[in-house]
Image (cartoon, rainbow, N blue to C red; front, side, top):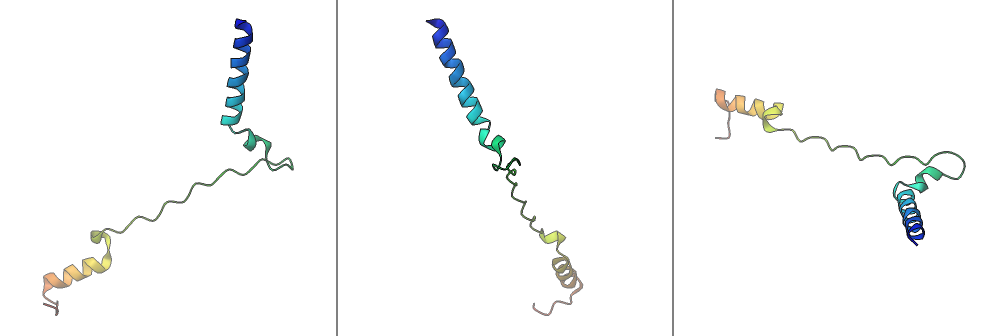
Amino acid sequence: MYLLVALAVTMLVIALAWRGFGADGLRGNGDGTPAPRPQRPSRPSRPTAPDDDPDFLNEIDRRLRGEDKSG
């Protein structure tokens, strides 16, 4: 009886592992070539901080020199 339960549990574990590790990916496209791996989305470009922006730095420089006409 214990042997039958152990065999059933072993078969269940193997079936779940086979499904969990992606047996579909191992089969491929049906023509012998493996299925392509999903691509990771590219990182969005990082925002530019105000102290890295040349226009912002030029504006601050103009204000410090007194060339600002807006007030």
